[in-house]
Image: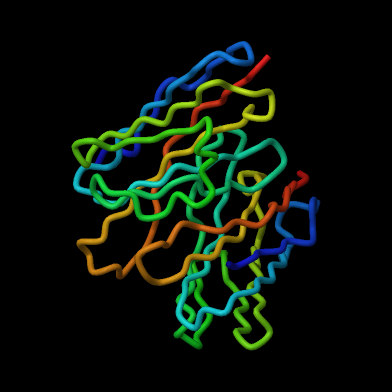
Length: 115
Length: 117
């Protein structure tokens, strides 16, 4: 079984600043995917960014990028030029490759962007 | 493309009553998941279907929870009898494997918020 740990329950930054959310995981799998999901108050889970474990290159999606350290089992999310609409819960999630591939989520980080 | 549909959006019941939630995945998505999200926590997988077969139900409390996906499309999750600790948001997600698993993105529905009094 795998575990996902997010050690920052809440973070608050000013608009336009850069913020980094931390995530560590533990697994015996060698092939897997990692995700960051955003959940606003509407409860709709929205995929922010994904990373394939076999790829060394860090994923980027516009203002969002990750720092994936496979050996350290670390997967942090960096949000640049933060916007008010980024305010939400952010969940780190692990997905093994294979048949039983339900997501394992961390407890989440509540990110607040201040105007 | 229509998203994952869930109903109802909200449900309030008394403990020991029964309740059912419905999910309609994105058309063509063979894999369907049910997650339970207790307030202040991340979602936890309850059950995974591939077409109408169960792939993983290791975290489903089978003494009170049941789920089915009879025709490999819609799915129903039932709780009978409900307990106070079942108060949570129940999320349904689906995944398309026909792309060869290139994206492996699970698409989530809006969830059903259950309150057990």
